[in-house]
Amino acid sequence: MTLSEVQNAIDERKICVLIPTYNNEKTLTRVIDGVLEYTQNIIVVNDGSTDSTSEILITYPQITVLNLPENKGKGNGLKIGFRKAKELGFNHAITIDSDGQHYPNDIPVFVKALLAENEDVLLIGNRNMSQDGIPKKSSFGNRFSNFWFWFETGIKLEDTQSGYRLYPLHRIPKKYFTPKFEFEIEIIVRTAWRHVPVKNVPIKVLYDPAERVSHFRPFKDFTRISILNTVLVTITLFYIIPRNFIRNFRKKSFKRFIKEDVLESDGTNRTKAFSIALGVFVGFSPFWGFHTLLVISLSVLFKLNKVLAFIASNVSLPPFIPFIIVASLFLGSPFVAGESDIFNQEWNFELVKNHFLQYIIGSMILAISMSAISWIATFLFLNKVSPENN
Image 1 (tube, rainbow, N blue to C red):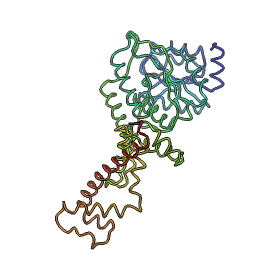
Image 2: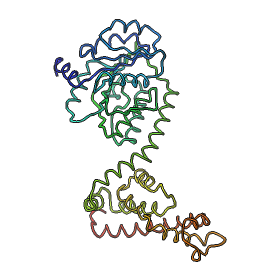
Image 3: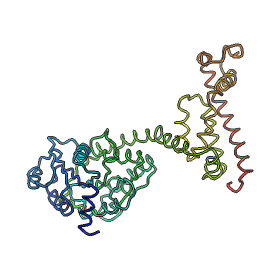
Image 4: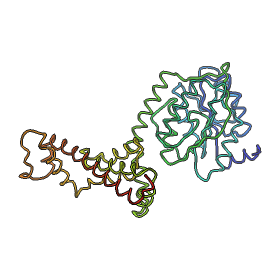
Protein backbone atom coordinates (compact mmCIF):
# COMPACT_ATOMS: atom_id res chain seq x y z
CA MET A 1 0.00 0.00 0.00
CA THR A 2 1.18 3.51 -0.77
CA LEU A 3 1.33 6.16 1.94
CA SER A 4 -1.75 7.94 0.60
CA GLU A 5 -3.70 4.66 0.46
CA VAL A 6 -2.84 3.95 4.10
CA GLN A 7 -3.84 7.48 5.13
CA ASN A 8 -7.14 7.24 3.26
CA ALA A 9 -7.92 3.83 4.75
CA ILE A 10 -7.21 5.13 8.26
CA ASP A 11 -9.69 7.96 7.74
CA GLU A 12 -12.33 5.82 6.01
CA ARG A 13 -12.21 3.05 8.60
CA LYS A 14 -12.05 5.60 11.43
CA ILE A 15 -8.83 4.28 12.92
CA CYS A 16 -6.90 6.08 15.64
CA VAL A 17 -3.52 5.34 17.19
CA LEU A 18 -3.49 5.07 20.98
CA ILE A 19 -0.16 5.57 22.79
CA PRO A 20 -0.07 4.89 26.55
CA THR A 21 3.10 6.31 28.08
CA TYR A 22 4.83 6.47 31.44
CA ASN A 23 8.29 7.99 31.83
CA ASN A 24 9.45 7.26 28.27
CA GLU A 25 10.96 10.67 27.53
CA LYS A 26 13.86 9.16 25.57
CA THR A 27 11.69 7.51 22.93
CA LEU A 28 8.30 9.22 23.02
CA THR A 29 9.14 11.92 20.45
CA ARG A 30 10.42 9.37 17.94
CA VAL A 31 7.26 7.27 18.31
CA ILE A 32 4.85 10.18 17.91
CA ASP A 33 6.77 11.62 14.92
CA GLY A 34 6.70 8.21 13.26
CA VAL A 35 2.95 7.84 13.74
CA LEU A 36 2.31 11.36 12.44
CA GLU A 37 3.63 10.28 9.05
CA TYR A 38 0.44 8.23 8.70
CA THR A 39 -2.21 10.07 10.70
CA GLN A 40 -2.98 12.83 13.17
CA ASN A 41 -5.66 10.61 14.76
CA ILE A 42 -3.47 10.11 17.82
CA ILE A 43 -4.49 9.78 21.47
CA VAL A 44 -1.68 9.83 24.01
CA VAL A 45 -2.48 8.80 27.59
CA ASN A 46 0.14 10.22 29.92
CA ASP A 47 -0.16 7.85 32.87
CA GLY A 48 1.18 10.13 35.61
CA SER A 49 4.70 10.51 34.19
CA THR A 50 7.24 12.29 36.41
CA ASP A 51 9.87 12.98 33.73
CA SER A 52 9.67 15.48 30.85
CA THR A 53 6.78 13.69 29.14
CA SER A 54 4.30 16.52 29.80
CA GLU A 55 6.66 19.10 28.27
CA ILE A 56 7.15 16.92 25.19
CA LEU A 57 3.41 16.49 24.65
CA ILE A 58 2.81 20.26 24.78
CA THR A 59 4.73 20.53 21.50
CA TYR A 60 2.07 18.42 19.71
CA PRO A 61 -1.12 20.54 19.67
CA GLN A 62 -2.56 18.52 16.75
CA ILE A 63 -3.02 15.34 18.81
CA THR A 64 -5.31 14.43 21.73
CA VAL A 65 -3.51 14.22 25.08
CA LEU A 66 -4.99 12.80 28.28
CA ASN A 67 -2.91 13.63 31.36
CA LEU A 68 -3.63 11.40 34.34
CA PRO A 69 -2.67 12.79 37.77
CA GLU A 70 -1.04 9.57 38.99
CA ASN A 71 0.28 6.33 37.57
CA LYS A 72 -2.30 3.55 37.81
CA GLY A 73 -0.99 1.06 35.27
CA LYS A 74 -1.01 0.43 31.55
CA GLY A 75 -4.36 -1.33 31.61
CA ASN A 76 -6.03 1.65 33.23
CA GLY A 77 -4.47 3.95 30.65
CA LEU A 78 -5.70 1.80 27.78
CA LYS A 79 -9.25 1.69 29.16
CA ILE A 80 -9.35 5.46 29.42
CA GLY A 81 -7.92 5.75 25.91
CA PHE A 82 -10.50 3.35 24.47
CA ARG A 83 -13.34 5.35 26.02
CA LYS A 84 -11.97 8.58 24.57
CA ALA A 85 -11.52 7.00 21.14
CA LYS A 86 -15.16 5.91 21.06
CA GLU A 87 -16.27 9.36 22.21
CA LEU A 88 -14.38 10.83 19.24
CA GLY A 89 -16.16 8.48 16.84
CA PHE A 90 -13.39 6.01 16.05
CA ASN A 91 -14.17 2.37 15.21
CA HIS A 92 -10.68 0.93 15.63
CA ALA A 93 -7.64 1.74 17.73
CA ILE A 94 -4.05 0.74 16.99
CA THR A 95 -2.10 0.64 20.25
CA ILE A 96 1.65 1.17 20.15
CA ASP A 97 4.06 1.23 23.09
CA SER A 98 6.06 4.40 23.67
CA ASP A 99 9.28 2.66 24.78
CA GLY A 100 10.67 2.48 21.25
CA GLN A 101 10.39 -1.27 20.68
CA HIS A 102 7.68 -0.86 18.04
CA TYR A 103 8.17 0.66 14.60
CA PRO A 104 5.46 3.13 13.52
CA ASN A 105 6.13 2.14 9.90
CA ASP A 106 4.43 -1.17 10.69
CA ILE A 107 1.08 0.65 10.87
CA PRO A 108 0.35 -0.25 7.21
CA VAL A 109 0.64 -3.94 8.17
CA PHE A 110 -2.34 -3.57 10.50
CA VAL A 111 -4.32 -1.45 8.05
CA LYS A 112 -3.78 -3.89 5.20
CA ALA A 113 -4.74 -6.87 7.38
CA LEU A 114 -7.91 -5.10 8.52
CA LEU A 115 -8.93 -4.32 4.95
CA ALA A 116 -8.46 -7.99 4.03
CA GLU A 117 -11.02 -9.08 6.64
CA ASN A 118 -14.78 -9.22 6.06
CA GLU A 119 -15.53 -8.90 9.76
CA ASP A 120 -14.26 -7.25 12.91
CA VAL A 121 -10.95 -8.67 14.03
CA LEU A 122 -8.44 -8.11 16.81
CA LEU A 123 -4.89 -8.07 15.43
CA ILE A 124 -1.75 -8.62 17.53
CA GLY A 125 1.73 -7.87 16.24
CA ASN A 126 3.92 -10.98 16.05
CA ARG A 127 7.44 -9.97 17.10
CA ASN A 128 9.06 -13.32 16.20
CA MET A 129 10.32 -13.94 19.73
CA SER A 130 12.76 -16.61 18.56
CA GLN A 131 15.05 -14.13 16.79
CA ASP A 132 18.40 -12.99 18.15
CA GLY A 133 18.37 -10.11 20.62
CA ILE A 134 15.10 -11.01 22.32
CA PRO A 135 15.57 -11.35 26.11
CA LYS A 136 15.09 -14.94 27.24
CA LYS A 137 12.68 -13.94 30.00
CA SER A 138 10.49 -12.18 27.42
CA SER A 139 10.54 -15.21 25.13
CA PHE A 140 9.59 -17.57 27.99
CA GLY A 141 6.85 -15.24 29.21
CA ASN A 142 5.39 -15.12 25.72
CA ARG A 143 5.32 -18.91 25.35
CA PHE A 144 3.68 -19.15 28.77
CA SER A 145 1.04 -16.62 27.74
CA ASN A 146 0.47 -18.30 24.35
CA PHE A 147 -0.29 -21.63 26.01
CA TRP A 148 -2.86 -20.25 28.41
CA PHE A 149 -4.50 -18.15 25.69
CA TRP A 150 -4.88 -21.31 23.60
CA PHE A 151 -6.32 -23.23 26.57
CA GLU A 152 -8.80 -20.47 27.33
CA THR A 153 -9.92 -19.75 23.75
CA GLY A 154 -8.81 -22.62 21.49
CA ILE A 155 -6.90 -20.09 19.32
CA LYS A 156 -3.21 -20.72 18.63
CA LEU A 157 -1.04 -17.61 18.31
CA GLU A 158 2.71 -17.08 18.17
CA ASP A 159 2.68 -13.82 20.15
CA THR A 160 0.02 -12.83 22.68
CA GLN A 161 2.01 -10.30 24.72
CA SER A 162 2.86 -7.70 22.10
CA GLY A 163 1.38 -4.30 22.88
CA TYR A 164 1.26 -3.39 19.19
CA ARG A 165 -2.36 -4.24 18.36
CA LEU A 166 -5.48 -3.22 16.47
CA TYR A 167 -8.69 -3.35 18.49
CA PRO A 168 -12.29 -3.28 17.17
CA LEU A 169 -13.57 -0.71 19.66
CA HIS A 170 -17.23 -1.71 19.45
CA ARG A 171 -16.59 -5.44 19.96
CA ILE A 172 -14.31 -5.40 22.98
CA PRO A 173 -15.84 -5.70 26.49
CA LYS A 174 -17.03 -2.52 28.17
CA LYS A 175 -15.93 -3.42 31.70
CA TYR A 176 -12.71 -5.03 32.93
CA PHE A 177 -11.31 -6.39 36.16
CA THR A 178 -7.57 -5.73 35.81
CA PRO A 179 -5.71 -2.38 35.72
CA LYS A 180 -2.08 -3.20 34.89
CA PHE A 181 -0.06 -5.36 32.46
CA GLU A 182 -2.43 -8.31 32.84
CA PHE A 183 -5.16 -6.20 31.24
CA GLU A 184 -3.75 -7.00 27.80
CA ILE A 185 -4.31 -10.69 28.48
CA GLU A 186 -7.81 -10.20 29.86
CA ILE A 187 -8.98 -8.14 26.89
CA ILE A 188 -7.87 -10.55 24.17
CA VAL A 189 -9.30 -13.59 25.98
CA ARG A 190 -12.65 -11.96 26.71
CA THR A 191 -12.85 -10.52 23.18
CA ALA A 192 -12.22 -14.00 21.75
CA TRP A 193 -15.02 -15.31 23.99
CA ARG A 194 -17.30 -12.85 22.16
CA HIS A 195 -16.49 -14.77 18.93
CA VAL A 196 -14.23 -12.03 17.54
CA PRO A 197 -11.31 -13.52 15.55
CA VAL A 198 -7.90 -12.84 17.13
CA LYS A 199 -4.95 -13.08 14.72
CA ASN A 200 -1.24 -12.30 14.50
CA VAL A 201 0.35 -10.01 11.93
CA PRO A 202 4.14 -9.83 11.41
CA ILE A 203 5.93 -6.78 12.83
CA LYS A 204 9.48 -5.68 13.58
CA VAL A 205 10.76 -5.13 17.10
CA LEU A 206 13.71 -3.29 18.67
CA TYR A 207 15.10 -4.07 22.11
CA ASP A 208 17.63 -1.32 22.92
CA PRO A 209 18.72 -1.57 26.57
CA ALA A 210 20.31 1.89 26.35
CA GLU A 211 17.00 3.71 25.92
CA ARG A 212 14.19 1.25 26.61
CA VAL A 213 12.47 1.67 29.98
CA SER A 214 10.46 -1.33 31.13
CA HIS A 215 7.98 -1.02 34.00
CA PHE A 216 7.30 -4.75 34.22
CA ARG A 217 7.83 -6.03 37.77
CA PRO A 218 8.69 -9.74 37.39
CA PHE A 219 7.39 -11.08 40.69
CA LYS A 220 4.35 -8.84 41.26
CA ASP A 221 3.15 -8.77 37.65
CA PHE A 222 3.77 -12.47 37.03
CA THR A 223 1.76 -13.22 40.16
CA ARG A 224 -1.09 -10.99 38.96
CA ILE A 225 -1.01 -12.67 35.54
CA SER A 226 -1.08 -16.13 37.14
CA ILE A 227 -4.08 -15.20 39.28
CA LEU A 228 -5.86 -13.83 36.20
CA ASN A 229 -5.18 -17.00 34.23
CA THR A 230 -6.49 -19.11 37.10
CA VAL A 231 -9.76 -17.16 37.02
CA LEU A 232 -9.98 -17.29 33.21
CA VAL A 233 -9.34 -21.05 33.13
CA THR A 234 -12.06 -21.62 35.73
CA ILE A 235 -14.53 -19.55 33.70
CA THR A 236 -13.47 -21.41 30.54
CA LEU A 237 -14.09 -24.85 32.00
CA PHE A 238 -17.31 -24.12 33.86
CA TYR A 239 -19.00 -21.56 31.61
CA ILE A 240 -17.45 -20.81 28.21
CA ILE A 241 -16.96 -24.40 26.99
CA PRO A 242 -20.44 -25.59 28.09
CA ARG A 243 -22.01 -22.40 26.68
CA ASN A 244 -20.36 -22.79 23.28
CA PHE A 245 -21.14 -26.48 23.16
CA ILE A 246 -24.84 -26.04 23.91
CA ARG A 247 -25.12 -23.23 21.33
CA ASN A 248 -23.52 -25.37 18.62
CA PHE A 249 -25.56 -28.44 19.54
CA ARG A 250 -28.83 -26.53 19.24
CA LYS A 251 -27.97 -25.61 15.65
CA LYS A 252 -27.94 -29.26 14.52
CA SER A 253 -30.79 -31.56 13.66
CA PHE A 254 -30.87 -35.01 15.28
CA LYS A 255 -30.09 -36.70 11.93
CA ARG A 256 -27.12 -34.42 11.36
CA PHE A 257 -25.94 -35.04 14.91
CA ILE A 258 -25.96 -38.83 14.44
CA LYS A 259 -24.11 -38.57 11.14
CA GLU A 260 -21.47 -35.97 12.04
CA ASP A 261 -20.94 -36.38 15.76
CA VAL A 262 -21.43 -40.12 16.20
CA LEU A 263 -20.51 -42.00 13.02
CA GLU A 264 -18.20 -39.45 11.38
CA SER A 265 -16.73 -37.70 14.41
CA ASP A 266 -13.03 -37.77 15.14
CA GLY A 267 -11.69 -40.51 17.38
CA THR A 268 -11.68 -44.28 17.44
CA ASN A 269 -14.64 -46.39 18.45
CA ARG A 270 -12.89 -46.89 21.79
CA THR A 271 -12.72 -43.11 22.34
CA LYS A 272 -16.39 -42.69 21.42
CA ALA A 273 -17.32 -45.49 23.81
CA PHE A 274 -15.34 -43.81 26.59
CA SER A 275 -17.13 -40.53 25.83
CA ILE A 276 -20.55 -42.12 26.25
CA ALA A 277 -19.36 -43.99 29.35
CA LEU A 278 -18.21 -40.69 30.86
CA GLY A 279 -21.59 -39.10 30.14
CA VAL A 280 -23.46 -42.00 31.72
CA PHE A 281 -21.18 -41.90 34.77
CA VAL A 282 -21.79 -38.19 35.30
CA GLY A 283 -25.51 -38.58 34.61
CA PHE A 284 -25.91 -41.17 37.37
CA SER A 285 -23.55 -39.42 39.79
CA PRO A 286 -24.96 -37.44 42.75
CA PHE A 287 -23.69 -34.04 41.52
CA TRP A 288 -27.14 -32.67 40.70
CA GLY A 289 -27.09 -29.26 39.06
CA PHE A 290 -23.51 -29.63 37.83
CA HIS A 291 -23.84 -32.48 35.34
CA THR A 292 -23.41 -30.34 32.21
CA LEU A 293 -20.45 -28.43 33.60
CA LEU A 294 -18.77 -31.62 34.75
CA VAL A 295 -19.29 -33.62 31.59
CA ILE A 296 -18.11 -30.89 29.22
CA SER A 297 -15.11 -29.97 31.38
CA LEU A 298 -14.04 -33.60 31.83
CA SER A 299 -14.49 -34.26 28.10
CA VAL A 300 -12.13 -31.41 27.32
CA LEU A 301 -9.66 -32.52 29.99
CA PHE A 302 -9.51 -36.11 28.73
CA LYS A 303 -9.87 -35.14 25.02
CA LEU A 304 -13.10 -37.08 24.53
CA ASN A 305 -16.10 -36.41 22.30
CA LYS A 306 -17.98 -33.59 24.06
CA VAL A 307 -21.21 -34.07 22.12
CA LEU A 308 -21.50 -37.80 22.83
CA ALA A 309 -20.65 -37.31 26.49
CA PHE A 310 -23.24 -34.54 26.87
CA ILE A 311 -26.02 -36.57 25.23
CA ALA A 312 -25.22 -39.60 27.37
CA SER A 313 -25.31 -37.52 30.57
CA ASN A 314 -29.02 -36.92 29.98
CA VAL A 315 -29.86 -40.33 31.45
CA SER A 316 -30.76 -38.25 34.50
CA LEU A 317 -33.68 -36.50 32.83
CA PRO A 318 -36.53 -35.72 35.29
CA PRO A 319 -38.72 -38.75 34.39
CA PHE A 320 -35.84 -41.08 35.29
CA ILE A 321 -34.81 -39.41 38.57
CA PRO A 322 -37.16 -41.43 40.90
CA PHE A 323 -35.81 -44.69 39.46
CA ILE A 324 -32.23 -43.51 39.86
CA ILE A 325 -32.87 -42.55 43.49
CA VAL A 326 -34.44 -45.91 44.30
CA ALA A 327 -31.70 -47.87 42.57
CA SER A 328 -29.01 -45.83 44.36
CA LEU A 329 -30.58 -46.36 47.79
CA PHE A 330 -31.00 -50.06 47.13
CA LEU A 331 -27.37 -50.50 46.04
CA GLY A 332 -26.06 -48.47 48.96
CA SER A 333 -28.09 -50.16 51.68
CA PRO A 334 -25.69 -53.09 52.29
CA PHE A 335 -22.89 -50.63 53.12
CA VAL A 336 -24.76 -48.52 55.67
CA ALA A 337 -25.88 -49.76 59.07
CA GLY A 338 -29.39 -49.05 60.23
CA GLU A 339 -32.75 -48.80 58.51
CA SER A 340 -32.43 -49.71 54.85
CA ASP A 341 -35.87 -51.00 53.89
CA ILE A 342 -36.70 -48.33 51.32
CA PHE A 343 -39.63 -50.24 49.82
CA ASN A 344 -41.89 -49.37 52.74
CA GLN A 345 -41.19 -45.65 52.43
CA GLU A 346 -42.27 -42.91 50.02
CA TRP A 347 -39.69 -42.41 47.28
CA ASN A 348 -38.78 -38.73 47.21
CA PHE A 349 -35.96 -36.34 48.14
CA GLU A 350 -36.91 -36.55 51.83
CA LEU A 351 -35.94 -40.20 51.62
CA VAL A 352 -32.58 -39.17 50.17
CA LYS A 353 -32.10 -36.67 53.00
CA ASN A 354 -32.69 -39.32 55.65
CA HIS A 355 -30.41 -41.83 53.97
CA PHE A 356 -27.83 -39.44 52.45
CA LEU A 357 -24.72 -41.61 52.89
CA GLN A 358 -26.58 -44.65 51.66
CA TYR A 359 -27.65 -42.70 48.57
CA ILE A 360 -24.14 -41.35 47.85
CA ILE A 361 -22.52 -44.79 48.03
CA GLY A 362 -25.27 -46.39 45.98
CA SER A 363 -25.26 -43.67 43.30
CA MET A 364 -21.52 -44.07 42.78
CA ILE A 365 -21.92 -47.84 42.48
CA LEU A 366 -24.74 -47.29 40.00
CA ALA A 367 -22.72 -44.71 38.05
CA ILE A 368 -19.67 -46.95 37.74
CA SER A 369 -21.73 -50.02 36.83
CA MET A 370 -23.85 -48.30 34.20
CA SER A 371 -20.78 -46.55 32.81
CA ALA A 372 -19.00 -49.87 32.32
CA ILE A 373 -22.08 -51.45 30.72
CA SER A 374 -22.46 -48.42 28.42
CA TRP A 375 -18.84 -48.61 27.31
CA ILE A 376 -19.10 -52.30 26.42
CA ALA A 377 -22.44 -51.93 24.62
CA THR A 378 -21.35 -48.81 22.69
CA PHE A 379 -18.02 -50.28 21.67
CA LEU A 380 -19.61 -53.49 20.41
CA PHE A 381 -22.27 -51.53 18.50
CA LEU A 382 -19.83 -49.12 16.86
CA ASN A 383 -17.40 -51.92 16.11
CA LYS A 384 -20.15 -53.68 14.22
CA VAL A 385 -21.45 -50.59 12.39
CA SER A 386 -18.11 -49.05 11.49
CA PRO A 387 -15.25 -51.45 12.23
CA GLU A 388 -12.80 -49.44 10.12
CA ASN A 389 -12.57 -46.83 12.91
CA ASN A 390 -10.97 -49.17 15.40
